[in-house]
Length: 488
Image 1: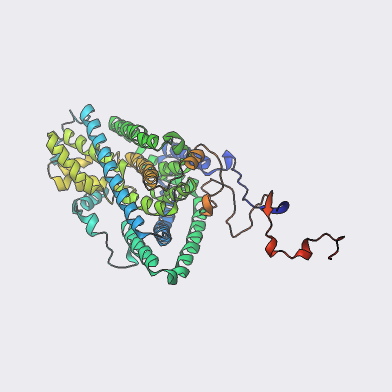
Image 2: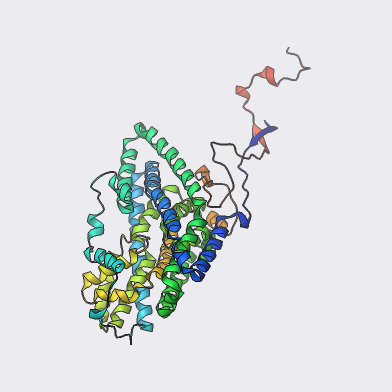
């Protein structure tokens, strides 16, 4: 028997914030103000450095715990550990293919336009500054195989203290696999990981409210210290790098998105808060938590997000790869170092290794470039000073492309792994507001997807009338007999 009932199903109210209350709007305003302050009052702009660096430091404080907890929680909740291994192999395969394509894109661009011809720089006479010397020394001391041997930490807590994401990933994978292998006895630990993850993301929500202030300080300092004139001195190289990066994003990554039946432009609009945050701070690390949460919201399964995104931050650096190939060939051309096609391909092979681990931090690309030239030995490492002045303005583009490349990589691996809801992703990228998928995601950390409270707090509830089936075997007849009837 089927009867109408007052029983209700409940859904959280999903109300999108107006544009003037969203984070990206205020970050954009802060970036514009930072440029103006740094341009008009350089000394004041340079004095804003502590504001930007403090915000970035506060964000980095949470990166390692978020990466660790997310990976552990994802692996511990997977029923088949073999699937975790296959996901990792698929991700690393995609990362290598993507890096090769990015390196080739940079090589082709600089060979076509040859901006270094005619510079005729004498590497022996180039003077290096103290700040440049530190980066060059760090790069020269790095070996191509270090990212492999450096993977295993010498202590459990060391990676968290030093902020080494690669080592944190290693620990998280081992710990997650152990929890999964132990079985039911580790259930309290799995529950504790979920609860601690919610707390850490709540702390993140507090810090993210200061994002406009951090973006203002970082941009004002960059313009105030390096000046707008720096942009014009080597403007052609900067322009080529940005155009080449745009080509890679819209053509190469756009083709991958088209294969997934998704739109690259709509995806970029979905991540506008994170992209503006990267633009203001010159590093992709503060945007990592938002990338992970938004991909989950867009329909990617949590274990895939937890494994692919953090790993991609060390192994899938498309922007750094374009920069490495383009900058290395520019220095070769500027110092009249002729490189044959086989030598350029050999350079590409070295870059495949030195680019790993140069995660999206300011100066990481410069260090990787120094390591590349030092390992190869053909191009004079001192030639790096030719582009040192503009490296800061290229770091924004590197970080942006790295971020976009990791977003596309995660979507691709999820599709390959049959863990991507393409229809949901398409609707979310188009701006449609949807309830969290399967109750897995809480969007209360102020990355501006939904205005809603966590599940364990008061939700705004919407009642919907529904029909229910009555199980007659479990219902007392007296309770369902009309009051005026009598039992015979």
